[in-house]
Image (tube, rainbow, N blue to C red; front, side, top):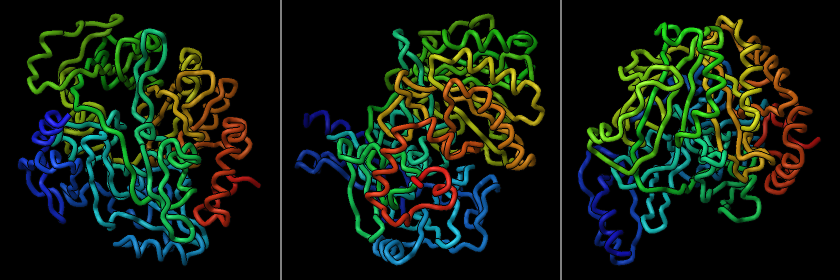
Length: 502
């Protein structure tokens, strides 16, 4: 109704200008909304380029994927981008360069395009609860802008610095808790996508919306269906997150948690039925519980003292409640443990007052695998057996994601409400080859559970493995890609060797 829309409008604290968000001040759009114009535009550029990887023109942020010698173009207009796409033989887009896999590597006979210099866009449609952003926008920028409004996005990933389009294209995710019926609650970042504008091989723009034919192959697309220039996401009312943290970090830091790794892994299925999202940080090489983070989504509340009205249990499965901040958590800055905070600070790990920090000081290499959530106990036990002797692991993180309708979502299993994700961060100096070898051992150990790797991380999977893992869904994706890009303009050698039809 109009009264509610006016209330929402007055709560928006967005300054408008073609150079970005330069200050915070009330921007009253109630009059426009009441006259029937139910959207407004702001250009988001709150902290310049500080969250970008400095050497993005030659490598990804971890340095294991390099494209030295490849032409990297940065169009500053849609017309310029359309001209590039229509005239070049091979084109791949690069975003914030946070992917570890060769998925976004260049082609030997092609070019790369970055969209960070394209015109900025942030359009909120208050009536429809949607937001449309340009393809160069990062989650850092999106969350910062939304932090000044009455809106939120349903979920973020741990890192805030990577691009939205790259995040959804690789099925990047946050985490989900489980309801009493045993079903996961929250999907990956791609679940929020309502529509996308995509430049095709002829330079023309097509719009793909939820419910359209081919939409299920267009979001988690691996960059194979064109160059996305804008994406529309669904919004929810802003909310707070009540966070409860149990155990210890670093592992072994609290002797009460020593000898508790097996107990923690066995208890996890029960623990996640009591929250909206969770993360378990552990080191399989140390017999310690690690740190279990449980998150409850509660109505928006700016008074932190309300946490005391529903104080968390001081222990969980024998593990102590953590209330003090952790310094230098995973190379980042201070990590706040138990407490209440706004969604934009608490959904991920490295944001304070909607401003991102960490953890990009030391290069690391990651791999992650998903199995159906019903195999949680067996998958964790097998992973422990394989990785308990690793000495160069920085951490492992356990999360879960609800299934969605995207054909290439690695956590969408036919017989399950979603997937369990087991991620490992290893020291970058090990080199990609050794990390891929470690991934291969995990993949072999989980083989009969039907593992699928994260598209943006390292893996030993080859064509036959992907065909076995995705089956008919992969065939349907290949068919759609062939329709929208018959000459394979938006592929590279790795994609053609492992993903595309022969």
